[in-house]
Image (tube, rainbow, N blue to C red; front, side, top):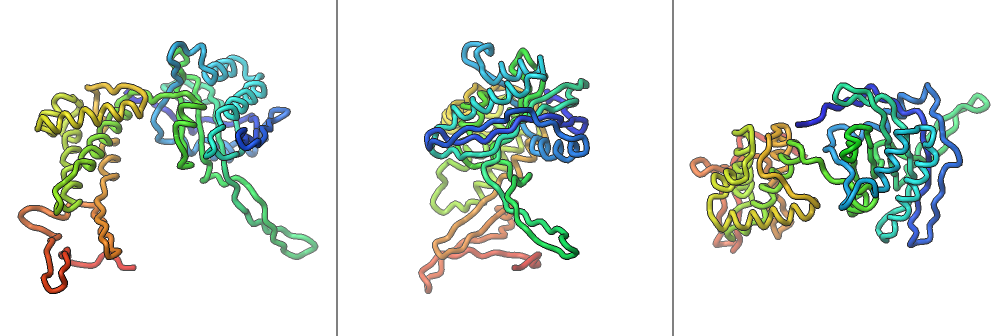
Length: 355
């Protein structure tokens, strides 16, 4: 069951800043000497910037192989939620922890904001939170000002709100279970650095996570199977959609039923089980075999299906919907004897766009 979370009541009031380098490149760590109190007129704007990336993210929680009492980030959050006057101390501890995990050569230096958040609305309660944002790039901004009755233009370097690379929102909820944690990493680097090495979190296996995981798994499994040489990619695309029909037609997912009704053949079932084992290893946790299906996550999975046929002549054909059926084909394949080349014929009624 998904947790009901609203961020529109929240406000950021105080923060700790840091510049976190890469120790392997002998880049330094610089942290705030005092807490920065956000002026009341700026709180709404900054809160919106800080919390916007966390909408519609899947829930995570801190995890440790032996005990949460030994989890560094969990202990920092617990101590801070117990005494918010220690924001500077624990904020600097978080920056030092991130610095100690930033040894990989691919990890970039960046600016770190650690903000205390008030009045997050979760499951009917108003609780506090801790927002951690890391930006690894700066953007030039133009500023037009008035001086001596004339207009002047100047440039400044700053953090673009839409280009914050990494983030984490720790909410004072589920404290005994590792807290309710939302996180993202847009940088394209190894996500394990942020989620596992620095944060030490695992996904919460709720209906949204499990539906997304199995739907993604089913589609990727079908796309990885080696089709016959002349099988067009849109047929594989249609097969993937048919697999997702199972999720649309039921309220609950059952793995044995899915294998029997969708995969059918014993060799397909065996290969899917191997595929599932690899996915579980990547996720770092086993997946439940029966759960309530989240319909909105099935819809998201369908949107990700996209067949692309790349040809050696430099042409690419993108198929985003079911364009070919056995009785009424819209795309046909053939071979031209004169040119000695294969071809694809496309039928249509009207051009919707051109460019």
